[in-house]
Length: 419
Image (tube, rainbow, N blue to C red; front, side, top):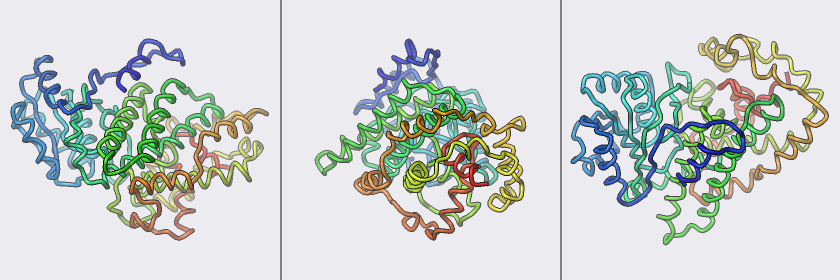
């Protein structure tokens, strides 16, 4: 897996020079020993572990590496509060390397702290639950708004199957939701390339599709006898997705409209808080996005309407404030860096619609995606993740999710064309 990624560093079909800051990626029974050797080889003298109350039990296996531990409450979200506490602890400890022992939120806290303190970190994932282990960006809830911050990717990752395979099956199912969500992430990237000429790397996309296919095959072959192998495949796909983000320099290959749905729900602008996991929300969001995309591409896609998008209406303050409330100003700032939207870069030609329809052949149907999620034990409806499930709420989500990020997706185009 790691070898296929590093090949793109030397020769990539896109012609660009990619960079990768994670120089070792080990998924093996003896990965903890590899980590010990790696730390010694790099000459680190004062490692510090960051964990939460749920993952602290795994730090005992690392006691011969360090006993200095910073812990946050179990199930803590990555917020400005816990990030500040982690930064203060790292500075006071004199750490020269951090070890993130946990899953998604714990890694976001660690990578942000590593970036702010200029102390490198190592990933030691405890569940195959999310693709952010080796990412170079941190998805944080910052004063109520879901934002992505430039952060530090790990210098290495060491994943022990006997650790992450013991995680609750719900966490692995969440990881599956994150992986399957790449179908629309990758399609949105292709649609942006068609509509605006946005840079897109076919080599990176190829790696992502290989990872998705491997997980889909593992889901279909899943049984009590293959559970360990299945979980390893999910972990490998999640790690590969994070490395793809490093190679790209942003989250484009791993986050599209389906993630924007999840992020909007996590911001609680139009709903009460839900205790659903990130990947669970991504999986449910994926199904709504797939239904919307297939409906639009079959019945409503219109080159003239795309060309006639009125950016002023799209970013009308009153329109956005109806959902984002006190977060309206930061939402406008996110969508209009330097006062300009990516929607303004759209150029429609006679080939635009045929090209989008051709690209859409890569999308599964919502029914196919739902079957995969169900087989993995993941939720497939808002009701299952404690969110409203009436049509008005779904329509509001589809309308306002594109404002979460300054990123062109087909969903953003669909909603902009309606105004």
